[in-house]
Length: 212
Image (cartoon, rainbow, N blue to C red; front, side, top):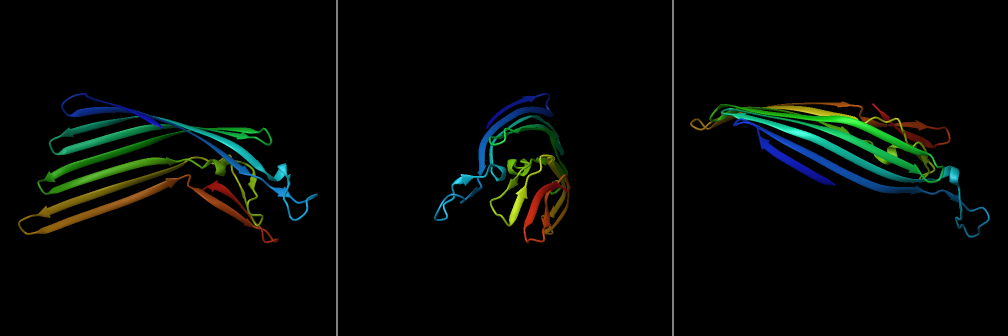
């Protein structure tokens, strides 16, 4: 991963920061199923391709963004916005089926602080962020690591988005020695990734990933 940042004052009260981040990850996932047909002593020797999975994952992210800061006397406001360009290539080495996933999301943030007095202040913050599915969640084949609990990926999963907002009020009286603090927090999730399970009569469980 690498990061590049540049900051430039636009005026006495406004500053601009430009940043760019890039990352690339390569992983390999192997789930091999084999049987004992033709082998003695319980030796597993023949690979069952229909029940096996061998994948290569290449995941890259490009995140250009900026931060704009305003500060004057009692008020300070910072606004950030970052664009997440995610690209996941999944290579199926057994079946030759390759999958290409591209997702684009915004990640805004806002922070504001107002000094109402020497010992009193009000602050507001908002932040949003994405939650990208793991590569194992996307592969559309079943994982047979546990025969009684099969897991099947979902290539149609969407990136989740989490957002939260926080409001804080602080007040202090040094003469009387009294202090007051109030905090209000709220959050909301979009396309949260969850698990759907089906219990079969044989006692086996089949699970897959879904967006809630």
